[in-house]
Amino acid sequence: MTGTPIDQLFAQYYESLVRMLYRRTGDRDRAEDLAQETFARAVAAPPDNPRPWLFAVALNLVRDDGRRAVRQGRRLQLLKGESVTSSPGADDDYERNDQIRTVRAALAEMRDVDREVLLLKAEGFDYDEIAAATGLAKGAIGTTLSRARRRLVEVYRAKEKDRHVAS
Amino acid sequence: MSHLDEGQLAALLDNELTPDEQRVVEAHLAGCAECRALWEETRALATEANRLVATVDLPPAMKPVAGQPGASSGISPAKAAPRPLPLRTLAWAASVLFAVGLGYSLRSVSRGPTDMEAPPAGQERELAERSDKSAAPPAVEQPAAPAVRRDEAPATAGLAAAKPEPTAEAPVASQKTAAPPPSGGVASPQRATSPAATGGVASSEVAGNAALSRRPSEAQDARGFSGLARADTRQVDMEEAVRTLAGSIRLVDGLEPVKVLVVPGSMLLAADPNQEVIRVVYEDPPGRELWLDQQRAAPESDAGRARTTDALLPGDTLLARGNRGSKSVRWIDQHGFLLALTGYLPDDSLRAIIPRVH
Figure (tube, rainbow over the protein chains, first blue to last red):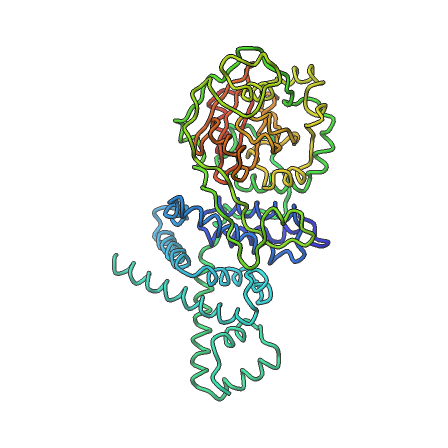
């Protein structure tokens, strides 16, 4: 973080970080807590290359948090996440919420590395930054990203099909 | 040239190829129907995947307001919303941004619940509850060995590293162990500061309650014992508090911190006496002090074990009463932080604040 004060980092990356964590966890409280923990660590140990560093720390935190949650049997609760309903009763909202739940479920079925690469790309990371945040070789990012996109779409479509058959 | 692979096509799609690489790939696509089909499929999948990911976004009402420091303005607990996300965010941001100014500007404030004077004999905890699960935070998580990936380093090492690497979550030691001791029989490795603290109550608890139960005026009267006058108690800014706690500071939504202190662990019941405690001091609506003590759970250690067997189990809310009207609720949050909220409020009011601590 050479020359980048924490308030600037916060202004630049906080929302993006929380959004990525929210997509990863489906739980806004956890996303907020993890983002704040991440920034707390940035205060304690200012990074040189802040964006990949912040997201790498956040992903490490969420992985460890998830492992503990699984051991404690909180997995169902975490996957359930929180309600995304904004106006109950509206058909459009109902459909949209169903879609969001399906996307989350599809994301949850992906390999960690695929999901992380996908979510980082969604936050505007280039391949160099994704490589720095994940530890993957830059040359492997394209292949990983392509596989992740395919996997997400395939799982999502399968779940959508099941949902429509069930209903 | 052999056929293109999906990685190359993804890199082309994401503008990650060098100009030379791009020319080669585009030349191949122009002459290879099979790769063109794969290219079209790659583009379609990327478009669809991006659309799907974008559907999972923060709802507008909960989007954090980044970069707009502005602390809360002393909203009373009753008026505060149950989940004022922006407030929490802003309070945290403001705490970081204005920590230095806050710390120094309030250095002269002498009122402080930090004296260690021994309480009168007979003081004891009157109530220790384990039934109020609605008010209690979620059970603390089991300790997790930090799984170090190729880009990780031990969490604590990162604090002092000249060039820090991303770190994993520090292991949290907070095991659910033995049942709590009966009221009046609390065991602790800590000692009271006065032999007057007897009567079947553990000395550390008496000392803790004494420290937490001083009214501001009494604290002023006992200035020689209290707060900043003590060699082992100091006022700090938020950044130092974060470093000391090795984690983000828990704050009460809707209340504005008056000052932040670092106090010895021995001043807080059930805390690790070998670690310092961060004390964030607020004022309640009538102007009396209300303070939130916090300590990160120690790794597995004698002190940590002693603490968990001492009085508090994850998921419990422990209510204690001081000798001069103060009351304190203690609990362990989901990240294993020991928290204690103390003030001159009714039991229910203190408990009602717990969900607002983040």
